[in-house]
Image (tube, rainbow, N blue to C red; front, side, top):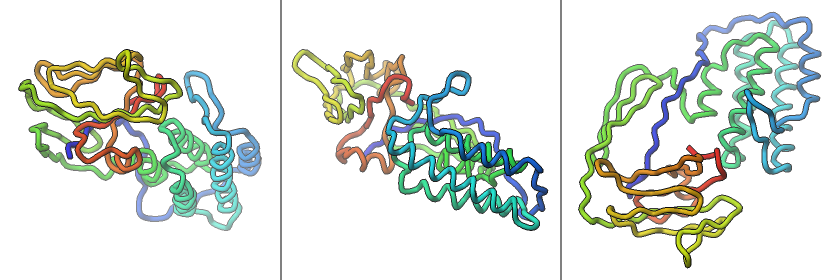
Length: 273
């Protein structure tokens, strides 16, 4: 089964720390900062420039808040111990992040970013400079600091992928229209019906598999268009950022059939890839 691949160039700033534990002196005002941190309301909407829409499910907000506050309590215990080290704090980060594993699929990208922001705020309280790559792995599923050499590979369609350190780029293969039909899976994750034609709609939490000829254009009433380009393969016009590509474990989560060659989910405006 052909999977739709989206490549992101990630600019990451967290640095890795050395192997030897470094003793850290706890700031005098750390206890007050921990108390203030635990008391503040979390996962609520924030304005620009640190824009965050807030978590949609109030029940999950309380669950995630409890997990973050537990990390804060663990940091506080380390800070109050004798001879705390950077490794002690990094160990607590690892333990704390692991507690989000069971809810990982319920965390949007913005929610994962806020988890990292809160942990970075705790790091600032004690002067910890690095999570040792743990926040990178939690946010993106890998630690870009571990990437050193350039790697190249070609998929079954002739697309060339180049990975060097934390940057991945793609050289797409030339595509020639032949009238071939492809199966395109589209799932509606919005609260509104998406109209495809006068008699065809995709209701909320429903999917359709479209048999698209490579000379066709599939236009949705939300402004999204799927089409085969004159030079390359399937292209998407998505001016309001409403489309996310599906791959990996999400193919199973959304019930994508094996014969589908591309898979997408329609999300609320601004939440797409």
